[in-house]
Amino acid sequence: MRHLIDPLDFTREETDRLLGLAETIMDKPSEYAHRCAGKILATLFFEPSTRTRLSFESAMLRLGGQVLGFSSAQSSSAAKGESVADTIRMISGYADIAAMRHFKEGAPFVAARYSRIPVVNAGDGGHQHPTQTLTDLFTIRRCRGKVGDLTIGLCGDLKFGRTVHSLIKSLVRYEGIRFVLISPEELRTPGYILKEVLGPSGHPFTEVRRMEEVMPELDVLYMTRVQRERFFNEEDYVRLKDSYILTPEKLRMGKADLAVLHPLPRVNEIDQQVDQDPRALYFQQARGGVFVRMALILSLLGLEPDILEKEGEPC
Ligand code: CP
Image 1 (tube, rainbow, N blue to C red):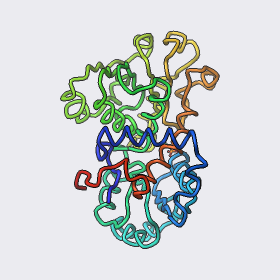
Image 2 (image 1 turned 120 degrees about the vertical axis):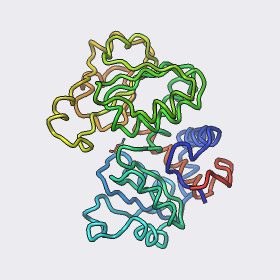
Image 3 (image 1 turned 60 degrees about the horizontal axis):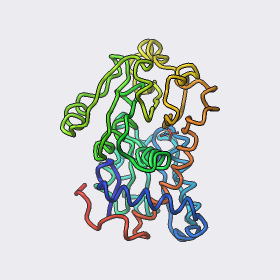
Image 4 (image 1 turned 180 degrees about the vertical axis):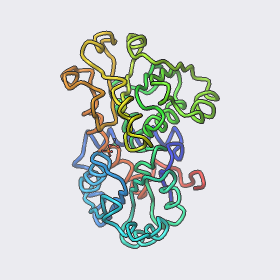
């Protein structure tokens, strides 16, 4: 049995095969409409979500399966003190696969250790968000034809933004990527990502404060929201929340084929006028998440046996 807790739980080859399957599903969805008949997905969301939970549910329903779950810790027995380990032991009897979002870093990893069904990390605190990364890679691959030979700017809250951490971990496995890390001093990329992931990868990277000075170099601009829920102090959030606002004027400095991505939700960091620009791909990106999660569900349930190897890294 395989889980997806960290983006590196899948090899690059497995990741590429899964993205290929997502493209096939996107092209011929009717061929997959009944593949999960009789299967149940549990969505265990201890933290708010719109895209991840609903795209997982949409994915399972589009595969002909069924879904159950909860959308907040308060509406589950976690509110009475039940542990993640006990929760997943129960869910293993109720469902065939589970997607878990939790405010505590490492909670889905703990769940996987006690689970009898595949567990997917749907975001754990400020740590990782591997299915968003699959969605991001899928979007880059579709707009560029491949992942590689790109200058990628990651902008905003690089400290708490789990999507950024997972994306960097995955992107270093592709050739020719140059990283431009755009953030205020207080929201810089965590040291462990710089020292243990980017440094050893040999990929060039720079840290800058101003978006404008690097905009003309970028092939991909990955905007992120400042993560209010991870701040200890509201004053710091208010001071930093509008550090970057992408406007049509700033976008004019970008390449004609720049791809603007954002994991969403957006707060104020992309002006709504940017939505009209053909380079703004974030809503397409969110839609692609459904096909990626369809491919993931099929792969983890063993219904597409050629995607994942039998043995993954031990969890
Ligand atoms: N991108 C993302 O994780 O969105 P949600 O928080 O709405 O799931």
